[in-house]
Image 1: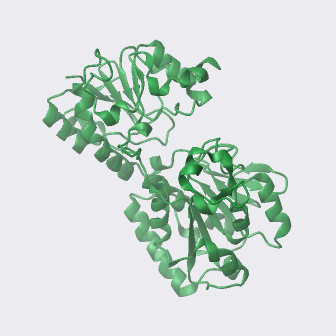
Image 2: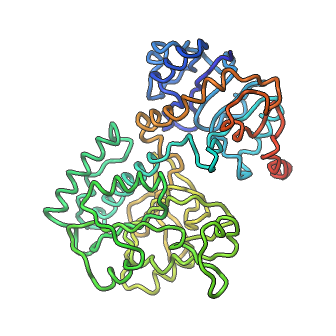
Image 3: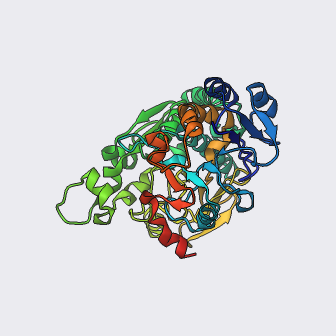
Amino acid sequence: MKTLLIRAEDKNRWERRAPVVPADLEKILSDTGAKAFVEKSDKRFFSEDQFTAAGAVGCEGMADGDVIIGVKEIPLEKLLADKTYLFFSHTIKGQSDNMPLLQKIIDSGSTLIDYEKITDEKGRRLIYFGPYAGDAGAIDILSLMGEQWADRGIDTPFAAVRRAHQYDSVEAAREHLTDIGRQILRDGLPAELSPFTVGILGYGNVSGGAQQIFDCLPTERITVDEINAFVSEGRGNRHTVYVTVFKEKDLVKPVAAGAAFDLQDYFNHPERYESRFEQFLPSITLLVNAVYWDKRYPRFVTWEGLKRLNETTRTRKLSGIADITCDTFGSIECNVKSTDSDMPAYRVDPVTGTTQDGHLGEGIVLLAVDNLPCELPKDSSAFFSKQLKPFVPGLLAADYHSTLEASGLPPEIQKAVIVYNGKLTRTYEYLDAHLKKR
């Protein structure tokens, strides 16, 4: 039986999550008889005492662990030889910044397993922070906009919304927002912001998290087909927040004239499609992006589109963008850099195509925190740990000296093995080309 080590996160000062929480660790150790270590951390939400009470031993460094589990990337200088690592490596797209990390794991003869690729037979992810990125993103954009509007002399109840990390839990945030919702019902929102519309791109777990936050307010769903007429004709009232959820068919259309949208064709051949989303930008107050994207797919918001928006509307309605997916230079082209919770947003000038740090002043506020679930460390860790727990015994019992197929690793885990004993596995051999580009 291998030893387990929970590493101390060091991505930034905001990363306070743990991949396994003490209560789940206690159950794992009871069921397996394995030994566990917890690397000392002065910022992890769950204390060392909580982990030692669950049966772990505190340690400095990662040498004591055979299977090392964490959340974010591990600094190169901390990687050790002949270990099994499980974390979000951010390498599967060939991300250039993390190719040195991938090479170091290969050179060390270690094994790398990425949570992002642990999937079921239908390709659905099994271990993720899911709704908490959406929760935090929705809370933060309301908080930022409340402050920005107040700075511009527009009084809204959103000025009272705190940042996600300032709430003890999602439930505490929802209770506060529900109180704010009652205020909106009673007093309404400013006329210059009405109808107050929220466009949410995507309908998965992240979108669901954002939607549950907005639904603390008095909301009404408006379909994609009616949103433009709804706004241009001045429908709605000041006591309601209007939410529109966009699916793939609403975001893109086939390039070929007369061709019908086909979801699977879009996934397989995104080059056959182009964005159709720009037509909706004039009708949206806050835009929330919760759609997976890579460079094969069309962009939804472009610099040129924002410039046209500014030129063709007398008063630009679009005030803020929460790019929860946070692919820089990606589906939201004006997302030119990711941020952290110290300064979560910057302002976009659609005319000049430039950005300015901070969320106060003129421009479209862009929230671009690339690690939003860390703002809700208690809830997001517990959610994540519950999903990971069933797989940990298999990770500890596996025979890493055998072939991958004969190792005894659960099949869902095997699909996520990027490097096995120092070699790229067959599924991920395409990364060799990215390694050679370094």
